[in-house]
Every structure is written in C-alpha cells, then in structure tokens.
Image (tube, rainbow, N blue to C red; front, side, top):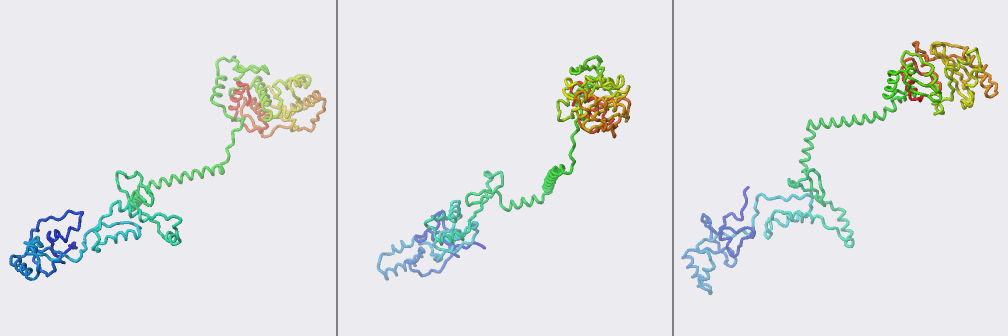
Length: 495
C-alpha cells in the first residue's frame, strides 16, 4: 500500500510559502521555490471570505481584475485597487483548493520501540506522540538518552519513611520487579567469556538466547563431543571404581605377614662381603677376632661355611658366644639360656662320668648367674663326624635330644641329668629331683637331606629355641643360613 499524502491534489510551493502557512518541519530544509514542471490542474473557484481564507489569491485576467476593482469601488469605500493588487502577491497564478482541515496519517515503515516489561511508561510515551493528534509533532526515533530516561523512570526512587503510607505499601507489594535485558554486540568491547553481567537493574547478556540455544543443540549433535563426554564419564567411573577398590582391598586381602627375623634376606653389601671372605686368596688372613672368648677366625676357618663343608669347632663356639651376647643385649626378646661349647660334653665323659672335670666351668663369678636360673641349657654333642644337640629344659622340666638324622641317644640325656643334680647341689646346696623329668627325642624335627649340613642344623636348633620359636625351617634354607652365619661372624653380632 502506498503512502497517503496530505491531499489528493498536488500542492505547489505557493501554498507552503504563503503568509498563513509556514513550513511545519523546522528541522528539515524548506522545499525548493522552483515551480513544478507541470502546470497545476484547474479547480473550481470557491467563494470564500478573504478574511477567513488562508489561501493566497491568484492574479486573474485583466478583465476580471477590472470588474473586481469596479465592484469593490462602487460597493465599499476604502482604498483603491492598489490594495487589492497588494493582497494578491502572485497575480499570474491560479488559486488552488484549500488545504485539508487536518493532517492525514502517513502509512510508511516506522522504527518500533521494543521495551520489555516497561509497563505503562512506554505506552504513555507512545500515546503522547500519536499521529492522530493534529497538535502533536511527529514522533522521532528513541535515542540513547531517551532510552535511559525510560528505564530510570520505570524504577521510581523509594519514598522516605515519613511519606510511606498504607496505600504506598500495598502498591509496592503489588509492583512487579523490572528487568531490562540488553545484548552487547560490539566486537571491540566483547568479553572473552560469554557470561551474563548485572549492572543495576539491567542484565547485560554476552550472547543472545537463540545463539546459546543453538550452540547447546550443536554440542548435543556433535559426535566428537559425545565421544569425549563418554570418555570423560568412563574415566570418572574408573577413578571412582579404583577408590572403592582401594577401600575394599584391605578388608578382602589377607594381611601380608612380615618376614620373620630369622629369615631376613641379606643386603647386596652383605652378600659382597661374605663372597670376598669365603673366596679370597689369602687363607691365613684374619677376618674376625673375638676377644672375650679369644677366638680368631681366619679365611681358612670361615671357609667351612661354604656349601658341602663340615662346620668346625671355632665357628660353632664363636656363634654360640654371639648368641649369648645377643641375649644379654635384648633380654626381653630372648629366653635366658646358657650355651656350653663343643668341648664341654667331651670333658664331662672323658674318663666316664666326671663332674669334677667341669666343676669350675660354671662358677658364679665367671658366669654371673646360676644354671638353675636359666630357662634352657644347650649342650653340643659331637659324634666323630656328626653333630647333635642336647637340651636341659629347666622351664618345661625335661631333657631333649635333637638329631638332624632322626637318631636318639638316652645315655647322653642320663649323663646330663646327673650333671644338673650335681651342679645345683654344688653351687646352692639344694637337692634337685629330676626323676620325674621327661627324656624325649623331639618329634617333627627338621632333618638334613645330605651328609654335610648337620652342624648348621644344630646351630639353627639352638637359634630358634633361644627365640622360643618353633623349628620352621628345612633343608632348602641351609644355603641362606650358611651365608647369614658367615655375615654375623664377620660382624661379630648375631641378629
């Protein structure tokens, strides 16, 4: 539909330049005074009162001017025809029809004001500039200052407490909070993150809502994003599963037992030290000297701890002295024991049973304790090419015989029974009854599987019994025990 003009007829520039009709738009430049290219169409000459008509007179033809001047002269007194001529500034133009009584609305594209939730303020502002009001100026586009005024006017300042009334409180209770949402699209001032920012009552959104919805929909349709989300979710579930497994493992996994002290493995330095001691060149080199017992260990003596070698007296006696020192060093950890050397039993039975031959071996001044106060007394027994062990178990009141080949010698236990009776009577003057004590061969005894480990089995019987431990070793640990015994002798400390 085309735009409607002010009149169905085209107006000339004379209409706008008349004294009574000025250009109604001061902000626009006045129209050109050049007459139109076409002559105006003739219109009927209405009879109007010159005093009320606002249309300028068009000069008629000479005949009409003459007749009009004559009529005015004869009918009314007054000035001559010069006044009539002055009232018609454009005498050579024909008169045009009068303007319409009111301006017609113009139908054309206009800029719409989009204000969200502004209530009656926006409607009042739009009604003040209605095109249908003849006296109102045409509306203009809202500028930034007008927009700010509209926003500020929509949030009235809170009244003072003195001026607050019940009606005002009710109106405030019914008032709807105002929120104006704008979108910033200035590329130079755009923030790196698409976030919403609240400035007073205006919420500035980094991206339009439709763009956010589009991006969210695109992310849902993106196969790569779905794969990444699945991998992230899978990794998170795996992490949670590992955490739950870590909490459950201590409950379902049996506790790992610590390595017993008799089986603690040797370090690399200890292994190197033992290897150098057992496989060195100089066989007469002194490797250890034990001053309390006056025992000197050379490489030749220590080499009995190599595999397939029989143990000699020096190594056995020094190891028994180290066991006694260990007990004195940690008395709460080990039983109170006495360790006879390899020469005691031979001396006791050298000429049959002879207590006087060994009577001075156990003086209190020498031992600093009495045998009757010990828990166990260990007596090494050497039978030509075989080592055995006899135990006087005072704590359990029995005599025990341990042979790594499974043998039993009751004569040895009978001689030891006579010895302990004579020892107690000699040192304390008391009579000890051992007839009720039991003489036994230890059952389930670890046995040797070759012809050269009897001495090492005897030392380990003594070691475990002094710890008050069961004999939980066998033939397969003998290689380790040989190297450990060599290490303890070289360091002169039993562990």
